[in-house]
Image (cartoon, chains in turn cyan, blue):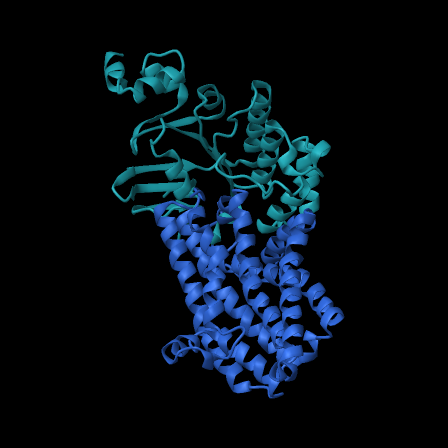
Length: 251
Length: 273
């Protein structure tokens, strides 16, 4: 692993009983990079992210995050990471401020109240900071989830469909905030998304997965050029439908 | 990039406090939750209290043993609601799909367990303190009059309730909400076997062997010895405590094994049935 590698995945395999979810993938993520993990349903994206977060134990292979082996040494680095995912919610009866207070303390923030004030200003949470989280609109809940994922100013941010079910305006707003955070903190971002326009805008690298394998790995612009397509969505469809190699050869 | 140290990450009282605060926010935000904490203990205490009044009027033995039923029901509630308070708080995390957030946060499993233990004591206190005062008012029975013995009874009962609740939490992590019914019903297995309302001698000899394997049996026998014979059986309490140490260790080990299995099977994010 080079000194600038924040995440190093080496020959990672995950088998659930008889189903191979991840099949021997390897990649490294450099500090400050933004990488998209793309693939259809069942490609192994969520499993890969879950292993990186220490939530799932690999069958074989290794995952190193900030120098710690996951999941064995996860407690040495979890306070330097955070994530946002549609698979989890925050307690609905608690107000936004109470939730952020709890998570700020769990993540070891020194001045939790100050951090909540800063996030409220940055993410425009002020109007609903003292309302129960369950009574917010989808867009407001996404902003709160984003606030929770930034509460500890993480060096690594893992995002699973961060703008799913948002209207285009709110989604654009969220992408803008993510871009700004990454630029300000030199944070390493790993993003799983089905929104190709989002990936093209945010990411400087795309890892394409299919049935647990890495099918391709390049910058969005080079992928589009290599496959002779006009956007990333067409490249995604080529790979998902098994036409990737033929298209690339034809080019 | 700073590398992680090889030293063990210290146990954090601050993270435990954050989890206690999270559940305190929840309890105080919902009056039905507070009402529920007091409702069943009150109903139980009144029912068994009036039954005892009736029996005292018709039996010399029960006249001498005044308070055994009310004390039994309140100690049983400590055992039952100690486990339920822990398990419900854990289930609240699953219902709100917050388990993934907690498992991916720096909160360590042992800190999570300690926080849930503290919350179970708070939940029980909200229910039991008003009920114990009602028992004085209705039946002239003062549970607090048992003094230091009551503390020993509570400690032993809480240790058993936590041991069971910790193991059930492991089953919930491993099997999702499909294991929810265990959280509600597992403690009722203890009701006949731990001889809450009758002496161990009542059981057939072969069943007495199993009864003496359960720590609460020692507490309920000790409670009857104290109220009927006015003797504090320290020997029973020590034996119960020793069994509790074994039971609690088994509960924690079981939880950690099931958590590891949940990590292998990828069930921590699912939480469904």
